[in-house]
Amino acid sequence: MQSLNSMAVNPSAPCCNNLEVGPLSARKIITITKTTNDVDNKTTTFTSIVQPMIVELIGTIFFILIGLLGACSDDSKNNSLIAGLSFGFSLIIFVASLGHISGGHFNPAVTLGVCIAGDIKLKKALLYMPMQLIGGAMAAGIFRLISRTSTYHRFRGGATFLVTIETLKETGELTKERINWWEGICIEILLTFVFVTVILMVTINSKSKSTFAPIYIGMALCVCIFASNMLTGGSLNPARSLGSAIFANVWSHHYLYWIGPLIGATLAGVFYRFIWGAKDNHLSDNK
Image (cartoon, rainbow, N blue to C red; front, side):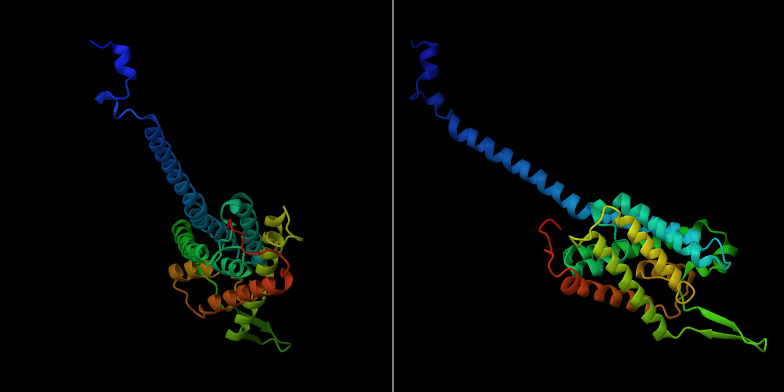
């Protein structure tokens, strides 16, 4: 009768045919590697696509909501100042806190300009824009919900529209003159161009990139709203105008708040790509 030890080491024994260590270890290593790769792929998908989309949604909601709450709190001559500071400082806060995740666009026009400049891929840009538009609509809806009815109607729900300018003549006669549609488009184009150009220069350009970018971006928005609030309402952002238009049902010349910002952002992206930042290395692999 064979001893137990001799059976354990006898390679010709039938019970040892499936005890090959090499192939089994290889299968274990392959399985573990495949599992690890699957986890890494899921993590990469979340951090590079899902997480930034959520940030753009949430950031847009609170950026626009805070801006609306401030801008619609005072209808005196200081309204432009309050509106500019409300939206500008709100943008500073959320770009500084969330910008490292998604870039802190919160504006389809900004996303378009950054995409044309080459700092974000088209696929991600197309995912950002619906989130921003939904965020703008949700912000306007929340604003409608928490605002007093009288205040909401007095400010027309924070909607943007071409302002009627009242002028007192020497004869004492009060005349009213509305900004023309083409003037409104030109204003939105020019100011969006300035705004997006500042963003590209302080966040992308290798020579002028700054750790104080959120402050510069917010102050740029402040200045642009100061300049245009009493003319077009100072939108520079289709998401900001769309939400208010939906809930306040104010659609007068709404198209110019898409045409103006998108053309302005396109020009800013083209100028950056071929003039301001022509020597920079665009479209990094990790974007």
